[in-house]
Image (tube, rainbow, N blue to C red):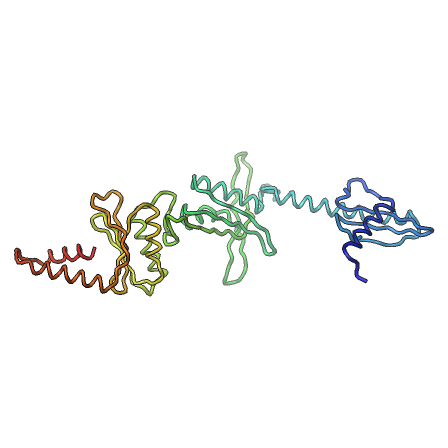
Length: 347
């Protein structure tokens, strides 16, 4: 019959209350505990590991001495295993280990130590940016994950951590190739070489409401200019929405970007600019949506936020203004003046 957890708990309590405990110096009860039970002319012994209710060993013995000797052997072995595990935990928490290879001192950083080096390097390279750097160990190796908001571009972050990676994965041969660091001379004049403990390092960048993933190429440690943001947005848009037409420009402190995309990209860009304090305007002509805003230092009146106009409404307004302008007989109209007026209407 299968023993229940309640029955097992009672079994351990039975040995605790009715049997003699055998202890081994240096082996804590939290590691393993053993008991000898004497009933009539028979003896039995039980060994429990940790807090387990079920005995790991529960056998009969011909006499008390044999039972005690077997308990001592089992507890001694359990103590050795526990000591090895404790040493492994201590080593894993240590930032590095040194060993000698001839005259060369080789320092091997653990994954925890490597994560700390990356954390310090990022702090020095980008002061004021908060990075979350965590390490992990798994069956096929070790990894370090970097997470942050806004801050530098992912390429800038990669340039900082790349020298601290253990090596690179060769996708053609499907093998991981470890890097061999160059041997240098330390401050004492001895030969020295370092290696690092992170096989894989990755970064994850998130964005605050003031910016967005479409500015992934920018360093956001400092507030970017409108020109930088519009150029970055247009560059991202061309790469991600290659089937869509997009363009941007700047004229008299007014920045515009247009797109035929229906993915809501310009709307999200407009939301971010609004959070930054800019006043934006969205207009639509046919399938093309245009976002426009003026720089903070512009002396012109800032455009107001307007609902997206339908193509029919925009066409009627444009046609009416054109007809009124052309009908004015007071002066001759040159092509240059007509183009200037046209830009004014479309703005």
